[in-house]
Figure 1 (cartoon, rainbow, N blue to C red):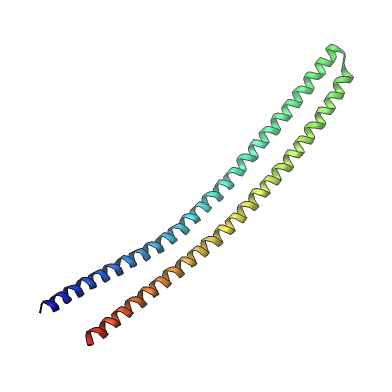
Figure 2 (tube, rainbow, N blue to C red):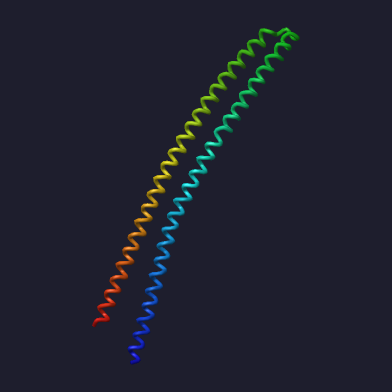
Length: 175
Protein backbone atom coordinates (compact mmCIF):
# COMPACT_ATOMS: atom_id res chain seq x y z
CA UNK A 1 0.00 0.00 0.00
CA UNK A 2 2.84 2.37 0.82
CA UNK A 3 4.36 1.62 -2.57
CA UNK A 4 1.15 2.52 -4.41
CA UNK A 5 0.79 5.78 -2.43
CA UNK A 6 4.39 6.65 -3.23
CA UNK A 7 3.91 5.80 -6.90
CA UNK A 8 0.68 7.83 -6.99
CA UNK A 9 2.44 10.78 -5.37
CA UNK A 10 5.31 10.37 -7.76
CA UNK A 11 2.86 10.18 -10.67
CA UNK A 12 0.97 13.28 -9.43
CA UNK A 13 4.21 15.25 -9.01
CA UNK A 14 5.36 14.12 -12.43
CA UNK A 15 2.06 15.23 -13.99
CA UNK A 16 2.30 18.59 -12.22
CA UNK A 17 5.85 19.08 -13.48
CA UNK A 18 4.81 18.11 -17.02
CA UNK A 19 1.86 20.51 -16.93
CA UNK A 20 4.10 23.28 -15.59
CA UNK A 21 6.63 22.61 -18.34
CA UNK A 22 3.89 22.67 -21.00
CA UNK A 23 2.52 25.94 -19.63
CA UNK A 24 5.98 27.51 -19.46
CA UNK A 25 6.79 26.34 -22.97
CA UNK A 26 3.54 27.72 -24.38
CA UNK A 27 4.23 31.05 -22.67
CA UNK A 28 7.74 31.15 -24.10
CA UNK A 29 6.47 30.36 -27.61
CA UNK A 30 3.77 33.03 -27.33
CA UNK A 31 6.30 35.52 -26.02
CA UNK A 32 8.66 34.78 -28.93
CA UNK A 33 5.80 35.23 -31.39
CA UNK A 34 4.83 38.56 -29.80
CA UNK A 35 8.46 39.64 -29.77
CA UNK A 36 8.82 38.97 -33.50
CA UNK A 37 5.60 40.80 -34.32
CA UNK A 38 6.61 43.71 -32.09
CA UNK A 39 10.01 43.94 -33.75
CA UNK A 40 8.44 44.04 -37.20
CA UNK A 41 5.92 46.67 -36.07
CA UNK A 42 8.65 48.81 -34.52
CA UNK A 43 10.77 48.53 -37.67
CA UNK A 44 7.82 49.68 -39.74
CA UNK A 45 7.31 52.70 -37.46
CA UNK A 46 11.00 53.63 -37.72
CA UNK A 47 10.76 53.44 -41.51
CA UNK A 48 7.80 55.82 -41.48
CA UNK A 49 9.62 58.24 -39.17
CA UNK A 50 12.73 58.18 -41.37
CA UNK A 51 10.65 58.78 -44.50
CA UNK A 52 8.89 61.70 -42.83
CA UNK A 53 12.19 63.19 -41.67
CA UNK A 54 13.64 63.03 -45.17
CA UNK A 55 10.52 64.50 -46.73
CA UNK A 56 10.42 67.37 -44.25
CA UNK A 57 14.14 68.11 -44.52
CA UNK A 58 14.06 68.64 -48.29
CA UNK A 59 12.12 71.95 -48.15
CA UNK A 60 14.47 73.24 -45.45
CA UNK A 61 17.51 72.45 -47.55
CA UNK A 62 15.92 74.16 -50.54
CA UNK A 63 15.14 77.27 -48.46
CA UNK A 64 18.69 77.39 -47.13
CA UNK A 65 20.09 77.17 -50.65
CA UNK A 66 17.74 79.94 -51.79
CA UNK A 67 18.93 82.11 -48.89
CA UNK A 68 22.57 81.50 -49.83
CA UNK A 69 21.93 82.44 -53.47
CA UNK A 70 19.94 85.52 -52.50
CA UNK A 71 22.77 86.60 -50.21
CA UNK A 72 25.31 86.07 -52.99
CA UNK A 73 23.21 88.09 -55.42
CA UNK A 74 22.87 90.95 -52.95
CA UNK A 75 26.60 90.84 -52.28
CA UNK A 76 27.43 91.02 -55.98
CA UNK A 77 25.00 93.91 -56.53
CA UNK A 78 26.46 95.86 -53.61
CA UNK A 79 29.96 95.07 -54.75
CA UNK A 80 29.22 96.29 -58.26
CA UNK A 81 27.59 99.51 -57.07
CA UNK A 82 30.36 100.27 -54.59
CA UNK A 83 33.07 99.38 -57.09
CA UNK A 84 31.68 101.89 -59.60
CA UNK A 85 31.82 104.63 -56.98
CA UNK A 86 35.35 103.65 -55.98
CA UNK A 87 36.44 103.49 -59.62
CA UNK A 88 35.32 107.05 -60.18
CA UNK A 89 37.08 108.25 -57.05
CA UNK A 90 40.37 106.51 -57.73
CA UNK A 91 40.31 106.42 -61.51
CA UNK A 92 40.89 102.64 -61.79
CA UNK A 93 37.91 101.67 -63.92
CA UNK A 94 39.64 99.10 -66.15
CA UNK A 95 41.28 97.12 -63.34
CA UNK A 96 38.03 96.95 -61.38
CA UNK A 97 36.04 95.91 -64.43
CA UNK A 98 38.42 92.97 -64.99
CA UNK A 99 38.18 91.93 -61.35
CA UNK A 100 34.40 92.23 -61.36
CA UNK A 101 34.18 90.08 -64.46
CA UNK A 102 36.32 87.39 -62.82
CA UNK A 103 34.23 87.46 -59.65
CA UNK A 104 30.97 87.20 -61.62
CA UNK A 105 32.31 84.23 -63.52
CA UNK A 106 33.40 82.56 -60.29
CA UNK A 107 30.01 83.19 -58.65
CA UNK A 108 28.16 81.74 -61.63
CA UNK A 109 30.41 78.69 -61.70
CA UNK A 110 30.02 78.13 -57.95
CA UNK A 111 26.25 78.55 -58.08
CA UNK A 112 25.97 76.06 -60.95
CA UNK A 113 28.13 73.56 -59.09
CA UNK A 114 26.06 74.03 -55.93
CA UNK A 115 22.83 73.46 -57.81
CA UNK A 116 24.23 70.34 -59.45
CA UNK A 117 25.54 69.12 -56.11
CA UNK A 118 22.17 69.69 -54.45
CA UNK A 119 20.37 67.77 -57.18
CA UNK A 120 22.85 64.91 -56.93
CA UNK A 121 22.59 64.85 -53.14
CA UNK A 122 18.80 64.87 -53.30
CA UNK A 123 18.77 61.99 -55.81
CA UNK A 124 21.28 60.04 -53.73
CA UNK A 125 19.26 60.54 -50.54
CA UNK A 126 16.07 59.41 -52.22
CA UNK A 127 17.64 56.35 -53.82
CA UNK A 128 19.44 55.40 -50.59
CA UNK A 129 16.22 55.74 -48.63
CA UNK A 130 14.30 53.66 -51.15
CA UNK A 131 16.98 50.96 -51.14
CA UNK A 132 17.08 50.92 -47.34
CA UNK A 133 13.32 50.72 -47.13
CA UNK A 134 13.17 47.86 -49.62
CA UNK A 135 15.88 45.93 -47.77
CA UNK A 136 14.30 46.50 -44.37
CA UNK A 137 10.88 45.46 -45.68
CA UNK A 138 12.40 42.30 -47.10
CA UNK A 139 14.25 41.61 -43.85
CA UNK A 140 11.13 42.24 -41.78
CA UNK A 141 9.15 39.81 -43.90
CA UNK A 142 11.83 37.14 -43.71
CA UNK A 143 12.17 37.57 -39.94
CA UNK A 144 8.44 37.27 -39.52
CA UNK A 145 8.27 34.18 -41.75
CA UNK A 146 11.24 32.51 -40.04
CA UNK A 147 9.81 33.35 -36.63
CA UNK A 148 6.47 31.83 -37.49
CA UNK A 149 8.20 28.73 -38.89
CA UNK A 150 10.22 28.38 -35.68
CA UNK A 151 7.08 28.74 -33.57
CA UNK A 152 5.22 26.16 -35.67
CA UNK A 153 8.03 23.61 -35.55
CA UNK A 154 8.44 24.12 -31.82
CA UNK A 155 4.73 23.63 -31.25
CA UNK A 156 4.79 20.48 -33.39
CA UNK A 157 7.73 19.12 -31.43
CA UNK A 158 5.99 19.86 -28.14
CA UNK A 159 2.81 18.18 -29.31
CA UNK A 160 4.75 15.19 -30.57
CA UNK A 161 6.71 14.91 -27.33
CA UNK A 162 3.62 15.24 -25.16
CA UNK A 163 1.65 12.77 -27.28
CA UNK A 164 4.50 10.22 -27.07
CA UNK A 165 4.65 10.58 -23.31
CA UNK A 166 0.87 10.41 -23.01
CA UNK A 167 0.73 7.27 -25.15
CA UNK A 168 3.60 5.68 -23.21
CA UNK A 169 1.79 6.51 -19.93
CA UNK A 170 -1.38 5.00 -21.27
CA UNK A 171 0.51 1.82 -22.20
CA UNK A 172 2.16 1.73 -18.78
CA UNK A 173 -1.18 2.06 -16.98
CA UNK A 174 -2.72 -0.72 -19.10
CA UNK A 175 0.05 -3.11 -18.08
